[in-house]
Amino acid sequence: MTTLSAPPVVKEDNQDPDGIDVVDSRGRLADRLPSLPALSPVPVYVGIAISALGFVVIAFAWGKVAGIADNVALQMPYLLSGGLTGLGMVMVGVTIVNVASKRRDAILREQQTQLLADALRELRNALDPR
Image 1 (cartoon, rainbow, N blue to C red):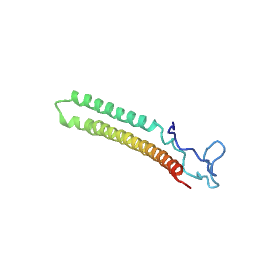
Image 2 (cartoon, rainbow, N blue to C red; image 1 turned 135 degrees about the vertical axis):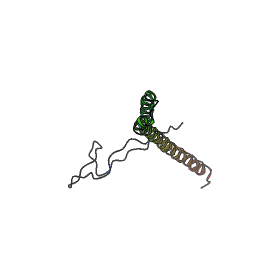
Image 3 (cartoon, one colour; image 1 turned 90 degrees about the vertical axis):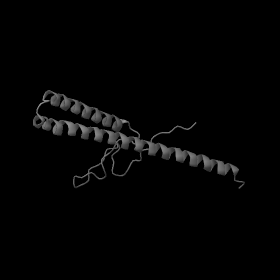
Image 4 (spheres, rainbow, N blue to C red; image 1 turned 60 degrees about the vertical axis):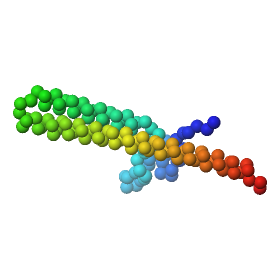
């Protein structure tokens, strides 16, 4: 049985033995900054945390607006600063979760396709009379 795993990390010429990017003579990174592994669940957790924080901001703004029920002019700052900021945070968090899950699905689909191609290649070699 074959298991799916993250693609192997290839050491590039611009990295030291520890895998840390090397700074060139001008003080810039020789390559791009290192990123998380492709199948890491960290972006999903970050997206969920940002969304939850957005709901907390919305609840706080709602609580403040509920205390000032008689004057709409006093409610507007809470609506704009709390409500819309919270809504924006929820949207950003959901977007992060969506992108991370689509990225993970694409990588797993690519690995499954490669496994299928390898199996078909082995079958073709087994059935080929040459």
